[in-house]
Image (cartoon, rainbow, N blue to C red; front, side, top):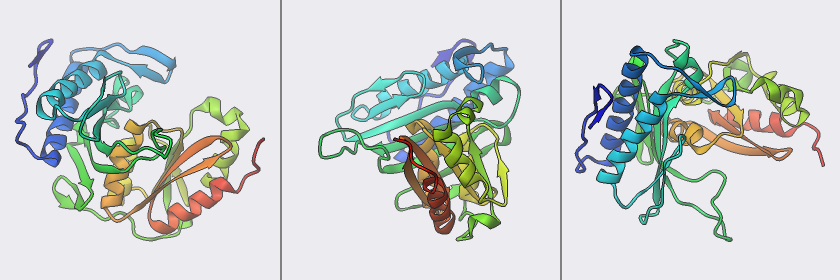
Length: 281
């Protein structure tokens, strides 16, 4: 298929799910990078730091077309609006460009990410806050890093097995995180964020959750926490961190869901810190 001046690969439906996920994030990431090289402008979504570009939309359109052809029974959910109901009980969750603000401003710290989740629901038939995830794939084009992992398959970085930082206390680790500046004025978010942040040996805030989670899985970063993550920012990395032997959790504090990843001890300690603050009525 051709998008503008760029020709993207038609993928083979006989690829297994891991091969398909790997090919999709590679192709989407390279397409976005080529489009950025040709010149892009961003459009504001909810704030000056929450933007979308034509590359986000084109990369998502590519992944959508390939999935509809290669996995016609599966559902599809994309950050930029893709929504296809499936019949298989599985849904592909797409983040065509995670870290769009970085991407637009010339940083290399952005990626394309995808997850395959089960369509879990509670007893009332409502989707659960943290569905089970079959696999995740994250590709950072400008560093040529591909993280991959899932149920029953070890996590890898460019084909080499990875295993995180081990089971270490959070006070010995760097913690990657993100909080939008406006949330720091709201004690519902600011208080638990501060309580968790001060437990870590150091903090890192780079602006791409999936890039962060890939690095938690390979041990470059120690752990990670962030509130109110949509599925496309959480599930690809969740799958890979767990496949690398790590742990994940979702903790609700003052009506906000906090997403946590790292080794077992770090996740337990971060979760306890987040929940330690006063609760608002």
